[in-house]
Length: 115
Image (cartoon, rainbow, N blue to C red; front, side):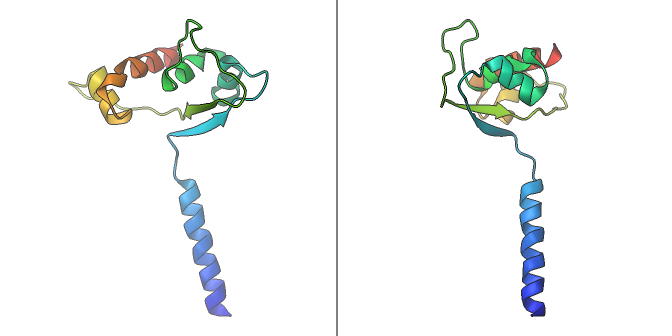
């Protein structure tokens, strides 16, 4: 009996440790009537942060690609990065977004986070 209780406690601790790990992004399935602005307001608290969603999902802010119900969006968690001397948008994009070619997305996200 003690072994069963100990295993139960250990599995609960392991599960808690797994759930406590911070995520860098999560998936959101667009519902009918939602807009990028409404999703941004719900997640980030400001409609202006819809630019973060545009950049993360490579959407065209000028209206080239709209969102539709059922569409899966990557919703980045807000995080801060300490900039070191010599960092560029390309090096930051390579480190945090997986490719230096995504530097335009990181610069747009940064600009969106400032306003």
